[in-house]
Length: 302
Image (cartoon, rainbow, N blue to C red; front, top):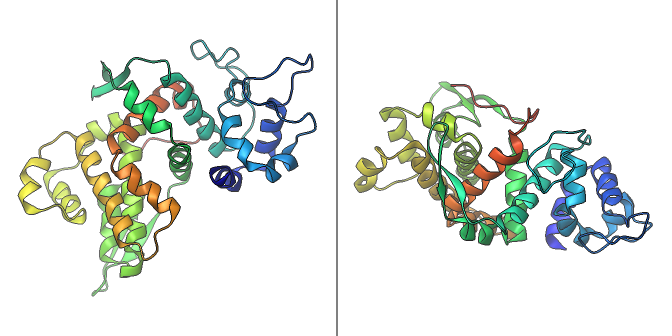
């Protein structure tokens, strides 16, 4: 119910109407694959019963309605998808991946740009997606990058200004020099988000357009990496560097937060499972987000 209320905060009336229609009893009385909603269930009913949402998001009928692939058990076959919000699309993709991984023995692991090898890590990814809160976390993460914030900020102790972008971790880390201490947990949280997003959704970009030695040093300082680890981390592959930095930034966001909330507890949890989260996003991106042209997630510019 708690997670359902969080989903409810993101879903539009049109999203809820689609969910209610897809989860309704079949006209011939054939039961659905999840507990059937009442025959009179509509968007208003779902608003009053948010506990039904997590299971409903995993219903194959909802997947078919959102992605328009027809038979969801086969390979992607683009059809007539329903007009829904980006958040609902991502939430359904996350839940569908949990269903898929339940019967998979391996997943594809990135070893270089457009290069993949089988990795027999599916049980760990199933365990990651076994948490309703972590499913919600991934859906919110993806939706948060449909609109990317950028701008300028003034450096503390001087009149200089610098540019930042949420999709550029080097520039985003510079915000730590310009925000009050009370806002630093939020910057650390977003640094963790962009690290996971780039490594999970655009790993080829992260590999091809990695940062140079000076920028790596700035990132390591921003993540408060001990000097003894600089040499090792400055030479690791880009994806591993993002994993290491992202986990540290999530832990910093949790450790510096003045108030610990249940939502922030999930951030700390994901910090300890960062590689699993990245691999789940790799699967989601390959299987659903870029199987066809997708209007909501644009690759970062080099």
